Structure formats: structure tokens, C-alpha cells
Length: 217
Image (tube, rainbow, N blue to C red; front, side):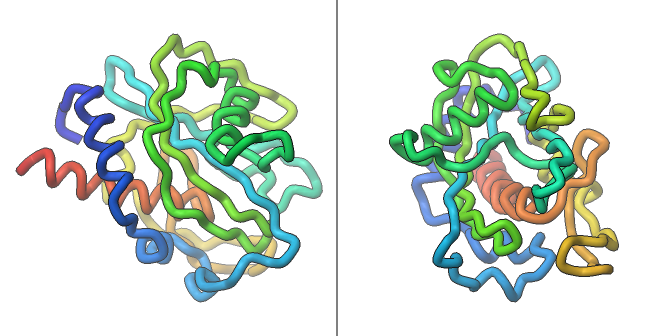
């Protein structure tokens, strides 16, 4: 993105997130199985929240991703994802879940995170989670503390990379539901990001593209 004062960008992003979202149209662009996007959540589904946490640096705004630990029962083990997790019964709302899980997984204090807005919920049939993505702005020291029981590694992804077409491509994958499937995804900080995380980031990329066009006009 062209250099824009970060607070000005955050304010305009917050305003844009109050408007209609691209939702399924954007998700379909990165979905391994687009036909499942209209599938209703299972009766026994659980809710979860994830966080696109925008942070500033001398090189420009970025957001963290995590590589998940390889737990045997986790259908998403070893994948790259956004910080987040399952809603706890004690959580008052889904935004609180996103803040709590972000603090637990990467160690950044929730009190320094401002919720900017939310993206479209996304149902993940393979794990029966209805994921609620939030966008946050972090204002504080970058003192990451990884929860190694859940997180294998931390990635720092420049926000502008979501709008770089050279970092968005196809790959042949083996998954829990297909021996060979061609999927779209992002190459971010040297890692391949696909599946639900890529779908969420694709919607955000559409919004960033639209917002940039507004800022340029």
C-alpha cells in the first residue's frame, strides 16, 4: 500500500468494515472446495474467533500468523493460521474470544488491542468450527511470547503482501479430505497459507484493495 499515516488508515478501515462485506464471493476465490461454502453449520458445531492484528513497524504495517503445533487429533495440525481459538463458555462475546486467544497464543496484552471491526464468519466443515474473524490494531511494544503448547512458530507478514499478485498462486495439496487437490493460497513470510486462513485473508485483501482505491482517489 502507498504510505498513509497509520492512524488515518485504521480509521478509514474501521469505517469500511461497517459497510457490506464481500463475504462468500471473496472466500470462493481461495476455497479448496467452493461448493461447500453454502453448507450449513452442523448441529454440533462450535464457534471460534481469530484475529488479523495490524501492527506498525519501520518497514510498514504487518500482521502476525502462527504455525500450529502438530497435535494428532487436530485436522489443521502444522498449518499456518491466524491467532485465535474456540469460544470459551465464560467468554462474554466472540470479540473477547479473539482478544483472549491472541494474548494466550502470542503474548501481546489484550488491553493494547483495539478492535477495528470484523469480517464475514466462515464455517469449516472438516473441524465443525464457525470461525469469526476480527481485525485489530495493536499499539504497544512488540514483545511476542509464544505459547509453545499451541504454537510452533510466529510469522510476520507485511500487510502490503496481501495485495501482491505474485504472492498468490495455486499448489497441489494432499489434505485430510482429498489425496490430490489444487488450491489457491498466499506465500507469506516464506510460508504457504491456504484453506480457511487464506479464505479469510482473501476477503481482507479485497477490502484493502478497495480501500486503497479510495485513498488514491
